[in-house]
Image (tube, rainbow, N blue to C red; front, side, top):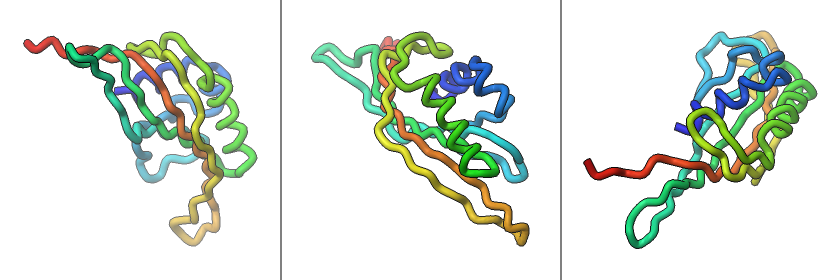
Length: 139
């Protein structure tokens, strides 16, 4: 899964891990997690084919959300992610990224779930990522 490989790649950046530590999650975050964090979601994937079958590359659209306690901090974390991933080609975990481009960005905020009036701020980016994949062996 691309989320696992992106997590490995993002955690290898000191600029990112200094802010979030190990708080990089796939799909969702458990309740009660505080502080800066990243959530990775594979929105859609498109496999490529030739007349002989599936080829070893895939296009995945991945949403990456940077969360923090202020909008400025969330945007600063998103900028670290952009600096690490946008335009990148190379190894990432068990895959090789051939191209990574941002196709959309948005700033959001999540209302408090209790009476604390403490908002959570999120900066969200959608990346189109061309990457390697295994090819079926029909065994």
